[in-house]
Image 1 (tube, helix red, strand yellow):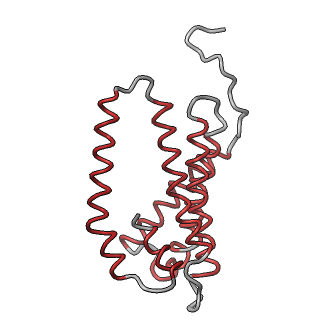
Image 2 (cartoon, one colour):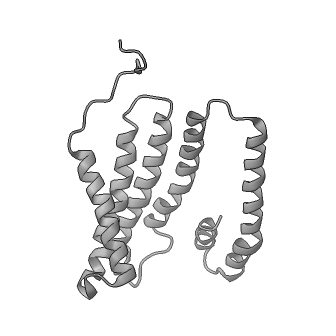
Image 3 (cartoon, helix red, strand yellow):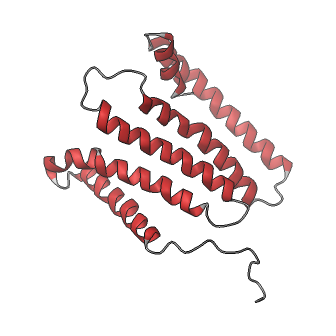
Length: 184
């Protein structure tokens, strides 16, 4: 055993998959941004950039996080939750593109909404686990500061955003609950 090296076994190699995902994520994001901000590609790129390419980038990001979870260590569970959350969002985007975007009579809420909303609890758990795995001794005062900041932000959101959405939302109880879940 070499000094300074981890005794944990390494995950099996995944070859060019990481490279392909990196090219898709960074290249696809660049194309979408250049198209949206500067009109790169003109009108013929509208559907590709807003649909398939965007969806592929989000799904690839979720897969990249899940691949990261293959590496043994304390953050493994965090990467699983983060990957599952992003993949849920990505699958919601794919469902939206295929079934909802071109349908003027699409249902609301739809499966896409459930997949979008699933991102939040999965990401919260993943981020909490990642913080726990990366901080060995975090002083309780810092946790208290973080809790105060989170509660203050939630209070501002409840005071301004949530009440506005609640006052302007109509429909069935399920439609109202879905509309309120997004800002919540």
